[in-house]
Length: 227
Image (spheres, helix red, strand yellow):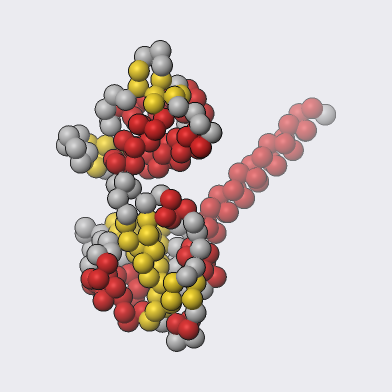
């Protein structure tokens, strides 16, 4: 398992814990929206869908923010996690590929509320470049380097067809983007120092189909035993 260095005290945080921190942040934001000022580790764990022992261990990598007998201050812990994962600042993001998925991503209001600002929408199709999506003009893909330099973009989102994804990733890396969120249904190769997160909706559905098939099998097996 890889680990990441804590930006404030050089402690290392396991990658699995890093992956859960945004889940805790979302749960804390939901509690704050309900005007809940404090919560126990059990309450926060239930809201995040993890067990409380795992949550306490994860938060121990950040420091001790809980008070025995009182629990966690929701707003304070929310800030500490947001600071840890870097979303107390405003991250400029570019989205490449403005088809149906690109439109949906551009209109996703959760980006801004979670510390991300879409500064440009890019597409290689001249017809797409005549569109305005979520109040943003769709620009030519050729403008990528200029936009990255102008806005200091470090994060790029790929929502193109699979066959175009690698070329888009190469261009992003050449322009200076060092983190990529890939929605294209293909694996992309990037050099060391560039982080890639892949979101494949069809794979997620196939995993659910597997679990549904297992449940159906178990149900039939139980019915056979009951006869």
